[in-house]
Length: 343
Image (cartoon, rainbow, N blue to C red):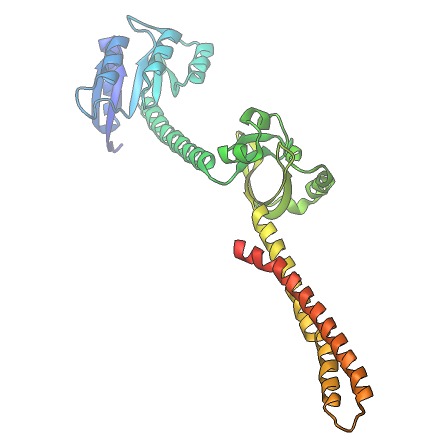
């Protein structure tokens, strides 16, 4: 069998010199480039990890830990080893076949539990390869979760995660806490229904019953209610995720209340402008047309003065009517112009 030519750094925590040499021999059957370091007790292990003699001495691909050392053993040894914070997978090597403690050690963070008298060279080599790769995967997963957490909690837009089955909040970022006025603990005791106006809740039930909402991305505009009772409009974008083993949704809630209010104000201004345009094109024309016709008749020298006086009265009446219409237009314009200046 061709040897593995990758470079490995292996720390063996073993006080028995015979067992240490046996592990070395086993691994050298399958590995061609190995740097072994021995720690004969827990204090040696601690010194090696806490006070490295070179920049890379504190780094190891894997640690093989004898469970019975002169200064510590069993659970006490595992707990103390965990406190050091070793950034490598740890395989326990034990002389005792204790299934209960083997399970316990795995729950305490050990990567594997091997019985010394049952170890073969190939079995030990395979365990090391498996646990190195598994450790890398877990580290990558933790880094991914850390990046998600940093992006989630530092986002300036309110975000939260909720359970699709119970509708309870599972996680909330700082922006959501600031916008809605609830504390993190208050959010965790609530469901998403409690940030919706009471009149919108029946519609939520209909939405839940619609199978078409079971898609990985959704976008829509909804009304939400803050802790102080203020109603806001939010543009919701959501994605289905699995959060701690639960089917959940991550929500991004962008407050668009100000934008909608601005659009509504513009629509009202446009309605006023349409009213002004209609008055100018229709209402103003009527008295103006009468005035022009009457002025034309008054200039006719064949028409008696008595009739011209009556026509003049009609001209004055039309002029007053036109003046009133212009005043009305000015009043409407004054309602629009200040808002346009402010905006």
